[in-house]
Image (cartoon, rainbow, N blue to C red):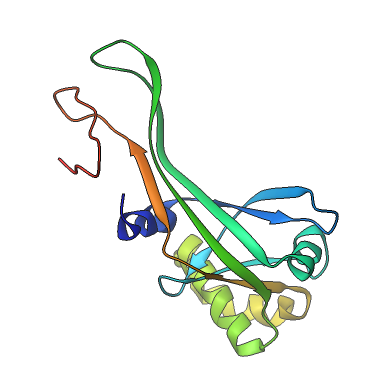
Length: 164
């Protein structure tokens, strides 16, 4: 699937797993609540110290993966046990945001994505916790790609980007 389709999967996924490389070279992947401000800039927040920030300092390259509409199913034509899903993967470079204005804009984007009905409390929450909140920017280094397994109404698997 093309990058526009993959971006839509990423925007709809409730969590995106971000995979890091720790200082000792071991892998570390964690599902996070990310929000995008454009097609290539994504943000998450975290504590001001810990595994994620140590990994980013040593190895800023990250991998993002997202899955939506993951449904166990029986293949309509062959009765195979399978999953229908939509997924996306992207590669990026992570860095700690140090500018307070960018941090606030990133936190606002995250809050608007996950708690839009509570934005009246945003300013007070940021004033209370900005000093103890880290924000990380991930800049995608190439457009994401996507995959899916989906059946049409006649039970045929929709392959090679077929939409309906």
